[in-house]
Image 1 (cartoon, rainbow, N blue to C red):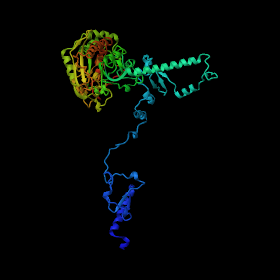
Image 2: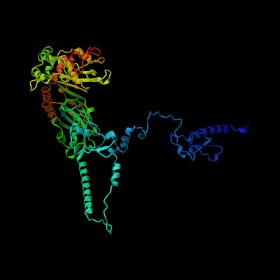
Image 3: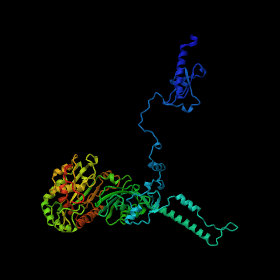
Length: 605
């Protein structure tokens, strides 16, 4: 029996061998041989070099088993230790970028990133079409009669065809090339020696044309080299001032003449924007520190842009400023140009912004006396249009009387108290349009809101300058804040109305003051200046003797403020606003949601 089974040592060796065979054969990295069959090949374990610590070694195996590598699985002999726990890796860890799934719209972008290039022919249809609010678009040039003979931008039409310089190009370039190849050509006769016969001067003309083409090609290459040497790309900050009466806001908009489009056109005409970047603000990293609505002015709009500055102007930013101003209209001025780092962004680097609103003192007119004045000149009758509540004749009659009004110290004090209630972080969902009371963006932080001493302008009208400083503002927020504060100062509303308007759980209808009195006074970059990453953007110190600060102060005092006064003397926007507040909006304003008893028609009253 013992002869059939064998000794206990042989039985144990057989069992161990079978288990090792099953274990190793499943992993296919070695072959297990019994010690009894190949005892002559057995070597001491100490004579075999151990492998790396991350692989199994022979020294850990039983002495009666020999591990010999297989010729088939030589490449798979190195294997991690199965007893070693695998480290946890988050989802997507270690995946290659080329395996990343991208949408069909990003295929061209990923291909450009791979080859580190950007070619117009690789752009999608939307990328080849310039902004519809830019003068690079032929529809805008036709609408506003803008001529650009030097424009050669290639972009795509809505039907998929490619145009260059606003002219339609053939829809199928390959078909056009094939047509040119198959077109009949003139055959030049040759003599017996194989030389062409130049009986009619064809050969000489061809030689002259070839020489001309070679010379032109050489001149073009030389011109390109000169342009390459002359233009240097630099990231700069433009310190701009403008009067926004003739423009439909600052940002580009379809079928509207905007300030951004006009500034872009000036940069292109100054040869600081290439024709391939003209009409594509994202290509030259355009960003602006603040937005202004239609009819709003600015004395300190800051825009960051990457310009192609001529070589002779690189060391002098004043030359760049003068070159830009040569192509800007008279109501837009570039006050300063400052070099910035490539990562600078005017929108994100701005810490605070300060606006100024000019309030005419006759808005604080005593309500009883004001109604008597309107009734005396028969301006109290109903049936008036919201857009034109008073005729030009009525405005001309009321203007001299209202221009003589002077605000009392008590009224100015009440106005300051009302403006002071806006300070801090509060909810302004009632001071803008289409914003829910639970929207996080309703919270705005107002640093200061003050009213300065009244000043009498050249036409004899007294104005009260007010300044508000904050981190950011909503659409129409400042104009509605002014409207409510003025009504509190003149007795048309109480302070409880403002408390309800600023609460998180109340909806209220508020009026909006005219846009003509509002302008952007200053953009502040305190954090950027403290970081010392580049030249400081310190224009807010009005007492500074810097040339840019003097130009800012001069534009504010001699251009914007007189323009506000002149515009009111011509159009009477504040007189019309005061009439609407007293007779139309006064019965419906400052009621909480659900308290309106009568609906006022949007057309007639």
